[in-house]
Structures are given as structure tokens and as C-alpha cells.
Image (cartoon, rainbow, N blue to C red; front, side):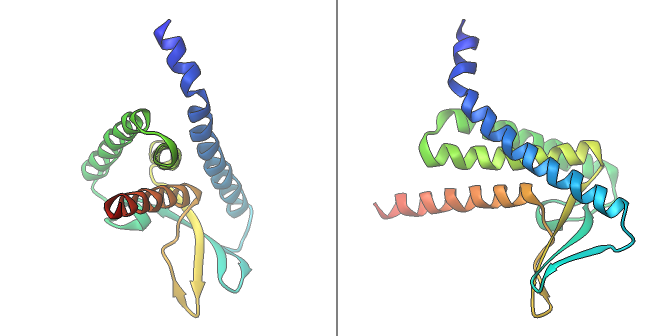
Length: 161
């Protein structure tokens, strides 16, 4: 009975995380399908945005790219541990803080799925301005980054009160 109440109480949270995961995986499916059937390796959207498929074997924004399988598996396991810790934090939090954790979880599960299914994370959003290119990222990274920015902002305003 207690598990049933827990599920009912957190169904909306689960659906929010699942929506982010689904949005991320749908965008990756579409981009993989496009590049699988296209001779072009870059799709120019406008002067500052293009879609460019990159397989990310590292962590956030391609940092720590490595070929050693043991190190890759260790990082993947560490990400799993962090995600389960974030699940725990999301149960203990409320309001905007909870939403931030859920955003990070939705994106985190999207990227961990890629690591397990594809062997690396699918990145494809390439933002640039006058030949300066930001790191290539994906929809999951957007939600992870927004969640972290909100958490930092909440912490900043807590300190000022």
C-alpha cells in the first residue's frame, strides 16, 4: 500500500522526467536517421546554428574523452551513482529545487541510455558566432545545464537572505 501511495504521489514527477528523456531520445533518433540517409555531415539551420553529428565518449561537453574501456565503464558507473543520488534528492526537495533535479535526471537518463545503447553520447547541436563554436551538445545537455543553473541561482539567493 505504501509503494502505491509513493507511485501516485510521484507520478507527475516521473512523467516530467520521462517527457525530457523522450524529447531527448526522439531528437537523437531523428538526427541519426537524417545523417544516416544524407551525404552531408552538417545541416545548416542559420548563421549561428547547425546540426553536426558527434559521438561523445567523454563527460559533459566532450571533456575527458578517452579510449580506455575500463575508465569509460568507471565513469558510466559513477554517473549511475550520481543519478540515483539525484533521485533521492528529488524526493526530499520541493518546488523549483525539485523541478531542477527532475530536469537533470531527465537529461541524465537520456545521456546514460546513449552510453549503454550506442557506446557513446549522441551530440549534434552546434552553436557558433563568427567562427567561435561552443561545445556541440544535445537536448539532454540543455535540461541538465538549465537544472544546474537554477540550482545555483536558488543557492545564490538563499545565501543573500
